Image 1: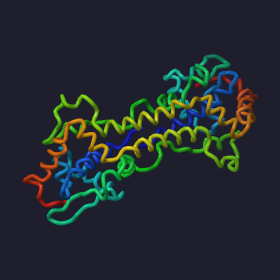
Image 2: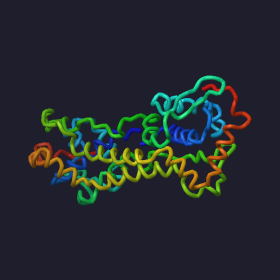
Image 3: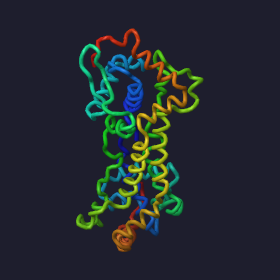
Image 4: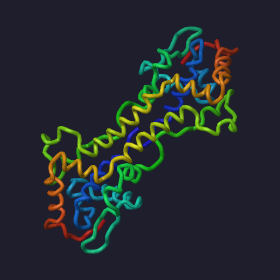
Length: 166
Length: 166
């Protein structure tokens, strides 16, 4: 089981966007992270489709968060990039073979599916309990306010007003 | 993110093995579940490599659990079949680009990695809290004792002493 690598990039981009005072072009985010612009654009588009960021058009355009970072959870970002489907899919094994349970006796998920769904719920609850604002606070706690502050300055720097295109 | 489909088969096989009074040939488990013998053998071999089942050789051979089903957790089976690696892999994005954090300031996982690790731990804890014995009890609770009892009889039935080969 492996999450899409895009999840990590998308979360880092969201944290960066919490500190931006202006829309941030995808190319600027890619430069900051030293990653391919087209790869990062794909993750930003997934965030956009999920309504977590929006792309502001125009000369000073770029990406912005659509709501306060306290209101965007890590789960929101994970689901936007990796999909919302649970990792375990029940194929109703109990209804197979010579001793198959009849379908009308299978209205409730089987014990195996219940155990897997319980773990999935615990995973989602943990990711829902952390917001993008929490992550940004964590960066401040780890490195002091100059870390995100430095990114803010860099984003607004000499190349910060380059034409914003995804 | 998707778990290997083998996880579901392996869990169902383990539940079946709790009720068997003799070693169960892989072919018999495949017949019970109406699934390809070679596919199921692959999952049983993964369980065997992880030390959860063992293959008894000989005419009345087959698979048995290596310990009491109370002592085998769902997590043991998931890790045996799907691997024990966490779903999220941190690639140290913070150490990239023009504002890279220096490596010696990165001894602790970053806030993103910590959030993802926390969710992974919650998922594992939930899977560790359920044993194969719990799953078997769940089947009894859902369907009454005749369900696993019926499987026990079937396993010991006329074909039950067919040559046991994986």
